[in-house]
Length: 113
Image 1: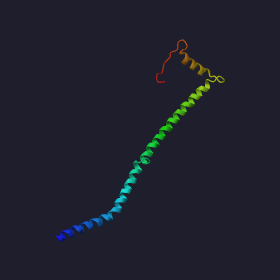
Image 2: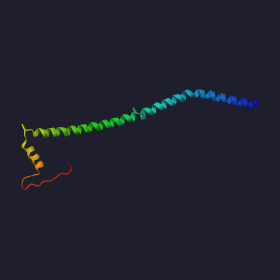
Image 3: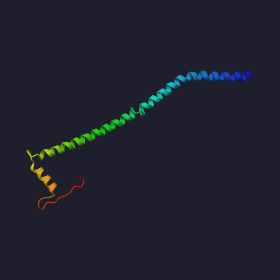
Image 4: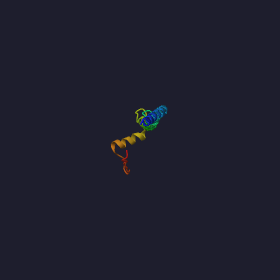
């Protein structure tokens, strides 16, 4: 009976000894896993960076489009200024505003605008 208890005691000591040698590497592995996961998936991780980079590119494209539309509008407004009036632009605006045209002209409406 005494040899059975000695064997159990020996096994428990052996388990503690081996587990004691494994604690450090397991904690290290856990820390590396934790930081590697958050480097990829975290709020400031690689995937978040890529998502923000794509949003930035989309915003820059929208800005370029709006800037070009604004320049076009400013050019058209400049042509309608009283001190520098373009006759073609005046005729175009009069036709649009008054919904009129010359005799024999065919008017095609573009519903996309």
